Image (cartoon, one colour):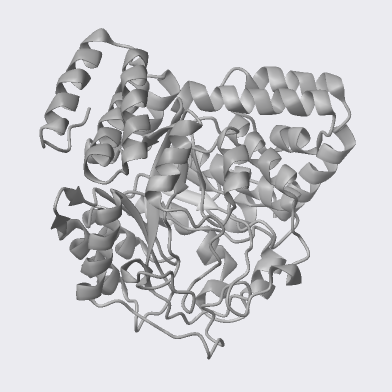
Amino acid sequence: MEYNAKSLIADEFINDGEINETIAYAQEHKDDMELIDKIIEKAKLRKGLNHREASVLLACDNEEKVKEIYDLAEQIKKDFYGNRIVLFAPLYLSNYCVNGCLYCPYHAKNKHIPRKKLTQEEVAKEVVALQDMGHKRLAIEAGEDPVNNPIEYILDCIKTIYSIKHKNGAIRRVNVNIAATTVENYKKLKDAGIGTYILFQETYNKKNYEVLHPTGPKHDYNYHTEAMDRAMEGGIDDVGIGVLFGLDNYQYEFAGLLMHAEHLEAVHGVGPHTISVPRVKHADDIDPTEFDNSLSDDMFCKIAACIRIAVPYTGMIISTRETPEVREKIIRLGVSQISGGSRTSVGGYCEEERPHDTEQFDVSDNRTLDEVVNWLMRADYIPSFCTACYREGRTGDRFMSLCKSGQIQNCCHPNALMTLKEFLMDYASEDTKKIGEEMILKEINNIPKDSVKEIVRERLVKIADGDRDFRF
């Protein structure tokens, strides 16, 4: 099969031959400074790079050029996302699963992990616990099991989550990370008011994919890889992609990931809303050393920088799989969303002590949400709990057009400050509140429009007096 970014067949838009040729081309030209300079100059235009150009930058190991790449990634991130970091939490609904994925403890053959599925009453309790932490945005997760986790169960959970209003808390955006499904089911998710539909490819190498997914519906590489096209056909504007680094050669995954983004842009006129970069981690009966494709922290950060340069408008997500030290390094290179206070077990937020028996993976950053917020502000990032774009209809190509023009700054910066103020008033420790109030006073001056600046000042006073949920 030939490579064709506009094809709707997975083998053509994620083409094995093209990826291998790209890796070979990158290795051949990684010391070609004239070419690398041309690619960097193109990247400075903030219009992105194709998978082959970005792969050359990833292969380059010249220290001076790598520093240029890092500096450019940091600047591009500031240009489009400012110094804001959006916060969210995963909510695990069920670990029942019929698939045989070799890297996930939820695989069907794991007979000693306790299987659990939240009732709607338990979902409500989890949501209250998350609201009491200060979260406004969730990503719901569930194993693939048509009997235990049918689409109707997921829809009921979404309805329950949106219905819970506890004290000043409310979940304002529910992103959904569930298995590939039908156009009809994606329409149902759209009608339920979801934010982003997220699905990780795990690996773009078809041969390895089929080995890693020996049983269950997920074994079908093409059906899984073509899911985002069905989601967009079903009316979902915002989709999030990602690979699980460590399952295969990182150069292969990097090229495949960018080819997927190019495909979505070519076919639907808008690329992925987010790209996630998880790495294989230890979990119940899963030993990450069994996968012979682990990559160093430095290479992990380099991948993030090259993704940011290649797709400058796309949000990037890093989870609590990574340590605080790695998260601190990688955030400045392009990450715009992080999880905080996460628990990856089913029903874990209601437990005082973090349960480990139903975790999907070990959490490496165990800080509370308040501690993460405090850390971000000390590093001069604005923790944002904003969900305005989704609720104001700024999704898909509408969001991207605002992002590309830079106009989104007039919405995102003030929304970040107002949602931070809510967190400070309702959930923050005294130390976090003190740092946050100082940050808000400083950052108001960075709002581009004077008229918006004045509105924000007025609304901050109203938030202090008890009003909530202002947005631009």
